[in-house]
Length: 249
Ligand code: NAP
Image 1 (cartoon, rainbow, N blue to C red):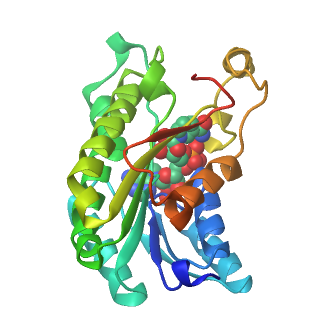
Image 2: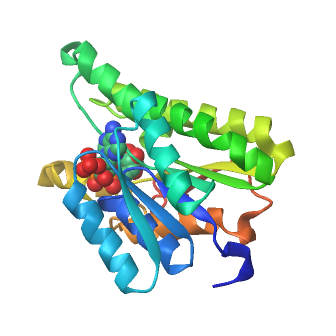
Image 3: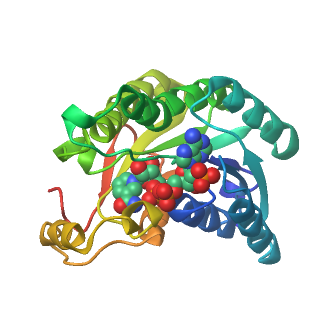
């Protein structure tokens, strides 16, 4: 572990499965103290924490629905007490509730916006003060290629993921003078539970638009996030890094 990452505390929202799990593993392997947030998959979160500890790392699971500001305050508070001030925030938790626009219910729209966009506001608002006090912080937000290109059947999801980009750039400008960098990562087609529900024909359709011709892995995204969290990325802020096999260029 280098001095630069010694004792840095990282919160990964939705860290129990998929991309978040890979991010938690990657950060822990680089010596960060990792808080693994989950909403309902407690067992997966605890198994992950155990495997990080078995490998010599430090991690702790924190349950809480990040779309609820009171739960964000309480899980962040518990984490700060146990691990120390959060200096790296990875806003990864996300859901899909897809439907053609005319069949999209208010609640599908609200759930996706609350989970994929409002939650970032709640988490950032909570951690940014102590980051500013430390004059060092990293905020990394998971967006999506869909937030840039749009996607039929995902008006709610693409609106939220496009919102993530605006939020990222505004907070990056607002907190640059305090030594905090804020960036977004926009994955393309990554193999996780979220994409496992897609039919074979939709997957083939997606892959036709991937110049590299194959889907990405959660680890591909995790390594990009770990780079943005590192000192190597100290001069990068307000950017969107695409991890998508060339889908958007
Ligand atoms: P996933 O496999 O479905 O995992 C989602 C994670 O988010 C789970 O750990 C889940 O925890 C957590 N979560 C969901 N709602 C939550 C809430 N309200 N509070 C706390 N945790 C919550 O998804 P993924 O594919 O890894 O996606 C991770 C991120 O990357 C998302 O933001 C997604 O939009 C984005 N992304 C994914 C892809 C892709 O191809 N997979 C592409 C572009 C962007 P529980 O199980 O406990 O609910």
